Image 1 (cartoon, each protein chain N blue to C red):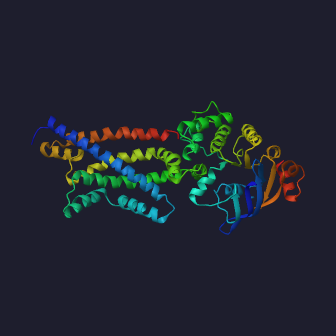
Image 2: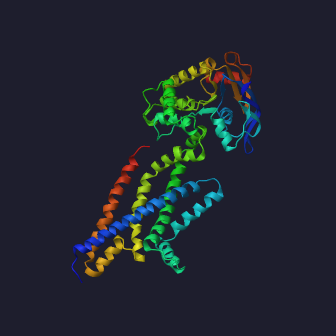
Image 3: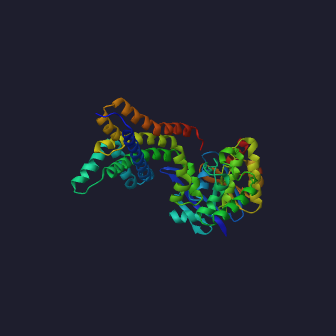
Length: 242
Length: 212
């Protein structure tokens, strides 16, 4: 059974349509990279998956449950689907460990000390065991983004969404974040990532979905799709980013 | 006419105590109401935001002295007796709520949308988002403006002298009435207001430099 099922999903802002007829099934344990030009709708599609954006048409099922925008249902959804943003969006007034411990605390999954223990575990996993008590402002961009990943992992989600998580980083910091993502992929976490790192997508993802003008233009196995793109648009996109 | 004496000084210092008590009451009740006003004012729902918008416009637009007169003399007409302290504390609290509410609303608006989204994505309820993620940042952001307003509030308590409440200003007037030593008496009164306000002004200045 697939974990995520998109069926003819559309998304419009008023009369402006940004996603057309998106149909895609994602299996548990699969890693899917969404690639494409800016404005092709990939971030919007990603944000539909945890209900940050409301779909305008079609159907979307997460773990078998049709999406609902009722508040309590959305909160339940967000315990299954966590997201990491391009701009980290850590809470600047909280320490690193408190940022990570938030999700288990507020969702009632763990008590105060348990949540903190959990936070330490995830921070160790992203290689930040020495930064528990630091504030986000004291960290580099790459470290902040790894905290954001730990914070999302602490939700203990079934699916992790990543929205251009390396796009705001200095080139020399991209590697440390990609290493963490690569490890997560190997451990079998289901991930959907919007990325411009084609080489990483090819290596770490199972499948690649190329979006063009609001449509899932070409979807296929990562290696084959990058080495032998079938459509002219993907060929053009790949030669432009190389 | 009497010579300025120790007893006069004691009266003035008692007045100072009441000025501080009024300020404290207005800070606490105005602060609570102001926080509510700020949060409700930020609601996208018109029927929720409208009442707080009205409260802000009313109490920012009407002179404080008029508000206090309305409460003190207005309620007395209905046969219910309000003490000058209560009337002044209520008037000052509404005044503080209107201004603090507007200051904090501005700070809430200044918190990036991404912070709300981030909190939302962690599965927080609306109340948790405010309490844990947004308000602490907004209050820190608005600390300089908040402390700046508290200086205004301390000075505004002098209006209470007009309904006969013996706070610092009124105590000064009384002492002046028997000694006619105006320059010395109001000099002391002025110095005592500064004693409260200067440290707050300096604190506000320092808070501006504080990083979030």
